[in-house]
Length: 118
Image 1: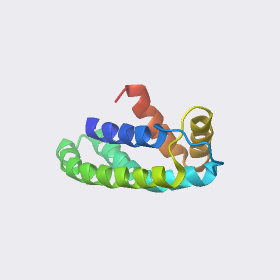
Image 2: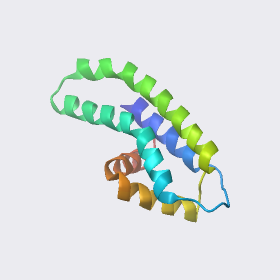
Image 3: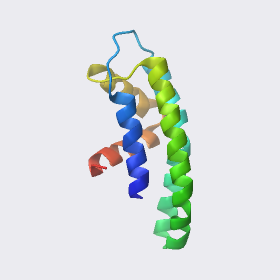
Image 4: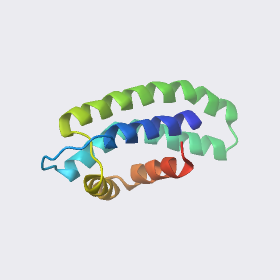
């Protein structure tokens, strides 16, 4: 689970590290980030279900899948950085609001990762 949160935080850092002064389409940025994060969110949900059911072996088996999905997510987020530039400050707030609007489950997952400090 820590690897999952680490991957999420890596994507957040990549997506929010730099500043671009261009006009941005925050809704489209959020939708694109949702697409990048969807596979990781889906496997995260699978893990939560398995943990609740006490299926620790199945959870362990998913960690290899999580690592592969995290790498794909990082590559996807890097492509978004090239496409949009990386956001911070006021732009980060607008992007976060758009993310909550378009994919609240992923926004919640990212916030949970930030709150846990991983």
